[in-house]
Length: 318
Length: 318
Image (cartoon, rainbow over all chains, first blue to last red; front, side):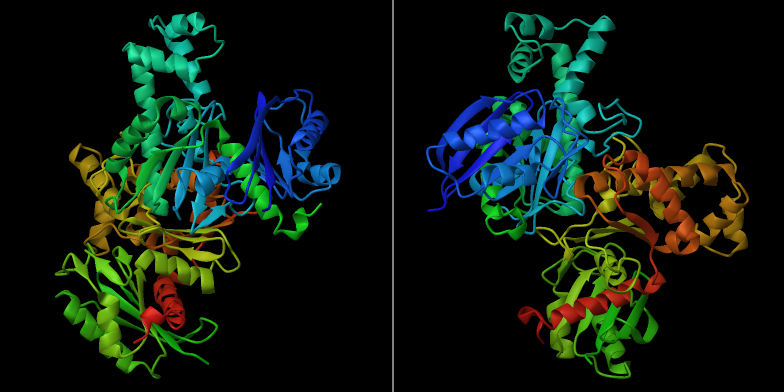
């Protein structure tokens, strides 16, 4: 058996998994992401690998930023990182192991493909609904990275020319309607404009500093009208995007992941499937729209799958 | 040398090419597409192949409709075709040769990839601006067909939720702004609403029954305000779609083909590139947006490339 490690580096936490040949967990653990830059993260990864029950044969990393050739470009949610950081090379040196690094959402989609809701698909889009909206692709039975390693930005497909302002500076992106940060801005604007909503009270009662998935779930359950309206718009934007991508890429599977997916489960996938259908040109020929199965573990399992690939790649050798 | 034939079946004409190992033309010819259904088209193809200077080793066909496994589904611009017709199997029998059949725009993109403006690209989108707006993809260095053979419907990416009516019945598709049929409807509606334009006079003077590329070119040259407005909207829709697809697929080449592309040339590609750039998330890392080089021959050359593939596929053998 070849045991490999996967570490999903998030803005707040790092999730680590040690997995076997069948992508099944041997152990998993959660750590805090050091906010002080890449050297501290390198140290934390070395510590995690040292604390695994068993020394892995290779390590894979998922990180929230563009990655190309193991080099990470400005991860927007990690503090004190330079414009470019050769994370894979540095980790190979520090760990003396083969290492591969991928974008966190690409890696999460890979995890669902090898061991979750994407198993058996050959043409899969992963849509991750979190602070932003990310994407990952499996095309023709292989992870798809694009010409320069930047593929998968589903959240920045334009669905409404001249529409809502997105955090990226453009207008009308899917993320402008369906990212949690955009939804939060839309709530703040509506409240400033005199709309009432239970979202803010629920947030306060739950002691959260953000409108988390559980806050949205509660407000929707109570029939809050602003929450319902904005959530409907979010689903519509995702569904239009899914329909457009099906028209372009003729997919056989769409996997919906991220915090909102975990909270709402298959109901959310069913709603997205139903709303995407009218936008697709070719009738459904056996496509499935499903919720991610590995919860917040998709990324670590996918990073471990990347580690397995690293064993086959000479440039990833330690 | 292995000589293969390619035939691009259009709504009006069939373009045939006999090509050598380097995808270069040995001969080409134009025929009228029989309007009386698939049996007449079969007969015409057999005649074309019989008239080639040299018997080809295989034949490839491009046809304007969805194609999967050699079966053509309702080609909308060909009269008297049934819902499904097994064109490849019938032609193999009639010609006693290996035959492959593909969608016309997929095949045209393939032609540009092997012998035109797409040479050397590994991640290419072909955008064909004609009566409708079609697309074709080369991904990871291979022609991309999708899970059920229906990939490439670039024209039915939604760029404006709730926007203009498309011929497909949906609203806000790229084709609703940039297809020649949609542009023609928009002109008719504007004129009915009291707008004036030189487009209709130019059409009449040129003795055309449609607003052809040359009619548009003349009106734009004269600064016709309705023509300019609608053409600007068409370019904007194409550019938003190109930007969105770059965000999703991280392309290294976009090839613009079809009648409008032939007429306007690299100026059109340059304009699309400039307008797509603000919509792309990742800065340009060596992408090129270029005009198709093979004119109306892209399809026949691409069909011949498909024929070459047919020689390698056991199921295509005659």
